[in-house]
Length: 452
Image (spheres, rainbow, N blue to C red):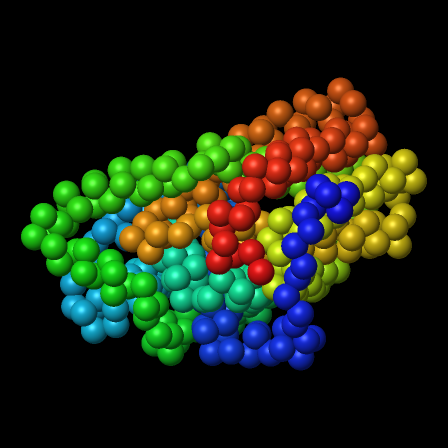
């Protein structure tokens, strides 16, 4: 294994220095932006489903509402606009990235309030349009936040920044999920069902001000100066032409790098095993005989805490070790630990064991995720195209969850739960094999700034 991993020695960093990075202003800004990014996605997901269910909407219609999340999957289509266009007035006052951040956050707040004013019992179509607008605004904010994070953090702080972002993202999702349902329950006794949901969504919109605060406290990335100079060139002054050229140029720029296609395949494969395993985790737990409260307590409680801790652990690993070594650690952990669910399937219903297996898998998944995103960030080396390239990479990374996982139900039905999770773990081996091949071809040496 030492030959496969590489012989580069890690930079010696004290524990105090490693932990101190999380208190730096630029990392704290990314943390606040993570909360703002994590809040909206649940408002158009499980929280909206709960509202529709309470309003008497049939399950077939509720199921169709999964389509409102489409903007998250196709955000790379308009990411070139974020790279190429400047927001009137705001970009001049705040800078290229911060101008887009403030615009997307203002749009998001208005969209959430608008969704809260809809009534599923009156018009499910109006709710669908409102949710689609929220998802589009949220996806746009994600595009800008990703680009801002990559450009504003030094290479050796990328993993720490992503760990902070992921932790705050999960907190935001928890607030708009379980927190929103608690709020509605509290409001219903005084406001009634309909007004309780409106008040809840209005309060969620107000919480986006946390992200606005981060935008105002942030400093525009130094790399924005190069993009502003490029936009000022006579041949690039037409905004729409510049956006079209930016889309093509960003793709050409990425593909011009050696082993670019292999890197894209690796991006699609690295989280595949986890994506397959997590796709059916809820039905698996319920099939074993666990109740909804037990599921919620263990997954939303224990799982949440372990995921946050795993994110910070991943940040520490990626900061202390060279990038390929970190990827080996994250890839091996997140793949092998899936077998814990096979063990659970053999043992059956056991609350202590489910708590342990959930803690293990959520922790190792978060470790792998943070290290993986540090790698994605290292691949985006041209400040002119950061938003477009990062959105494209995350789209490839989501193939496991959104495409390859579609057949998991058939596999689980045919193989049984214990064998299903073994198959999921085996699906992680191609990524590890490709990681060894990329390292042998010195792919990571070419990402010099990201390798410590």
